[in-house]
Image 1 (cartoon, rainbow, N blue to C red):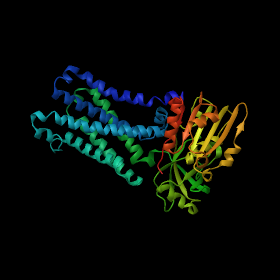
Image 2 (cartoon, rainbow, N blue to C red):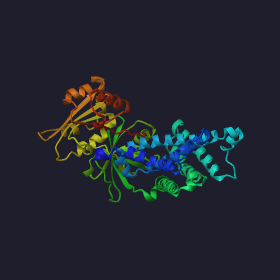
Image 3 (cartoon, rainbow, N blue to C red):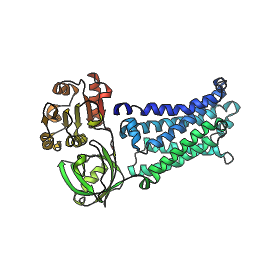
Image 4 (tube, rainbow, N blue to C red):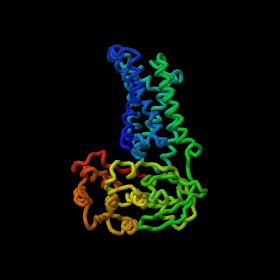
Length: 440
């Protein structure tokens, strides 16, 4: 059931995008819509505007992190991938919209075409559209081409709601087919309303609407060079409910540490009563975090979540191969600690550069079982001694891939290479599952 539902996101999204365009096409015969080059450009501009606003609205909806979207797309990481793709597509369409409309006026003179791109006090709907487009371009440049600290980037995105509101006012107030068709007008009006509500919910007033949990750091352990485990317990008895393999967003409330929110996979078992995070020093944020080890115990933290659908329980086959690279072991630590009485046949490949990077090796070795109904086997793989982990090695060690689900978590280059090798070995994409989400 999960596999079926997780494939509905894109078909549903494309269907919802098609609805306003189909309705637009029904208002007048297409022979009128595309009767001459000038009318063709007008029609293309209208379609681009309708689709651009529609995608903009859906983009704000996806940013809410509502768990329904996780189910439809197969995890929050895939929701965020859709979010970025939709945002870029909306920008292109909203750029096409005024350019095409201006091109249709060129036969009447370049001045008339140019004036359509200039915000004039006497034509507020057009001015709203131009200001919205300028703001959206600025935000997209910041997002895709300027490297800003995460907290600064987050501040810039608080202007996204104003940009969206201006775009909505432009579309709804400009005299066109919308004025003559209440159905299409109300459809887009509802979309604009949903987009604004989504922006308020996630960006402007998250502390009011989003459930967050107060935790206290109980202890910090060094697990390997540059790797620490932070153990947190609920401050007021209200504990986070999570599943093995999920991740959270956490904000550490401690002096010397930015209070911005970052994602980390939970490495503890759901029934343990605590939340443990196994963190490696990789980027600026995690380096600062691990440098503050002596001051961590007793500090407070806020947690949001849990998110993600990367769990062995979500996939059909009990025969699975888990592949971890480096700190990508964290979801598998949680899963190994949560293995229940149900039947399973699992091989865990734990790939690291050198032996000093192996985390909780003795615990994973002790968790190994070998009974007719339950088999959990650990296969450590050290690159300095054995080279790169390959699909061929995995197939030979695990007896092939037939009727098995494969779960991957590790550095993106490693997962990309293994996915390609697995495809070459005949493994269908629907059998390969990965968690790709990082903000270090």
